[in-house]
Image (tube, rainbow, N blue to C red):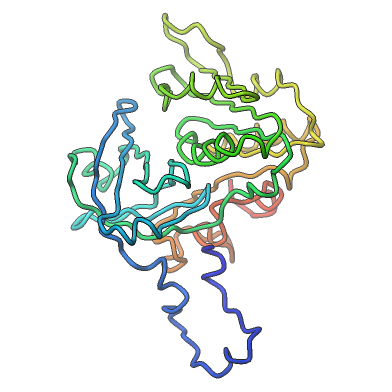
Length: 302
C-alpha cells in the first residue's frame, strides 16, 4: 500500500494533464492525515515494555483503517513528538490497534506514564508488509528475538486465523532472560493450534526457568522442516539477522524466501527526514520489510 502511494503512476494519459505535485500531497493524503485516537487499555508486559490498546475515536475512520502484517504507524504524543511503532495486533481487529512500546526515550517515557483515556495521534499505516499471500501452501518459520515478537505478532495472527492456507508453522522466540519474555499469556493458546509449534529459549536462565537455554540458533538446529517448501520471517535486533538467516541458508532456505523487518533509525515514516536512508534506499518507504537477499546487498543495512 505505502510503496504505491510514494510512486507516480504515469501510465494513464490523464496523468499528463494534471500539474505535477512536487510535494506529493495527493499521493500521501491517505497516510499523512493524523487520526485522533484514545488509549483504552494498558498492559504491563515487562519492566520496560507495555502494550497499548489505541482506538481511533471516529467510527468511520476506525472502520476504514486497514493495515497489512509488517506495517507500522506514527504515534504522536501532543507536545512531545511522534515515533514509529510496529502494529502488533491482528489485521482483522477493527476495534483497536495494539502497540508494544519499550521505554527508551522522551516520547516513550511520556507514554509509559499515560493512563487510560489519554488522547494521542495516529498516522499511517506506512511501509511494506510481509508477503503472506506468497507464503500460502508453504511452511512458515516465524522467528523473533527480544522485542522482535512485537512486529512478528501480526503475521502470527494472520497465519493462525487463516490456518488452512499454510502448511507447518514454527514460532521460535528467544530473549536474554526469562523476565524479558513478551506476551507470555498467549503461549499456550498458540501451542493448542493444530500444526503450530512454539519453541522458546533464553540465554541467561533464572532458578525457576525449566526451558531451553542458549542462543536462538540452537532451536533452529533442532527444527525438522523442508527448506524447499519453507518461508521465514525474522524480527529482532539486526545483529541477529546474520546468524539466523545464515543458518537458514545453510539448511537450504533461499535468501529471497527470508524476510526481515529493518526499522533502521526511522523517524518520519514518509522519506522526508532522510534519517533512515541507506544510500538511495529509505527503510520507512522501501521497507521496513525486506527479503534477506536485498538486505545483503545494502551496504551497512545491518
